[in-house]
Length: 97
Image (cartoon, rainbow, N blue to C red; front, side):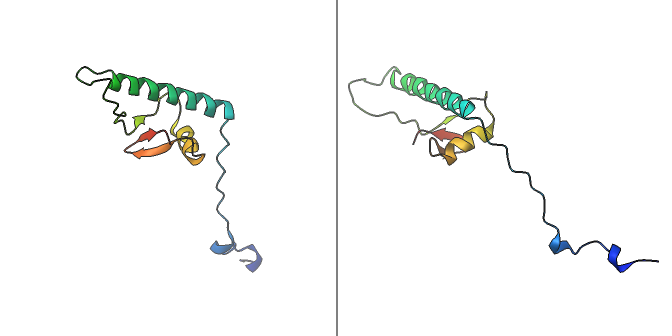
């Protein structure tokens, strides 16, 4: 027969097991941040050196954001956003704070 002590526990007593995301190595974060800064600088310099734009006008770069280098996973970029080292610019773009 069925023993009442063998019944499964009620659903509310079962805690979902969600593994915590492994912390990202600080060396990887630093490398990703440096790669992003380099790409940001090169993109800005490329924009500012366009023909038809006077370097003497003193206008700042109109770049809102750039795509993050593909060498690093999205989790790395999101961690840098969480640390306030980068900010989201929308549509998968990131910018310097």
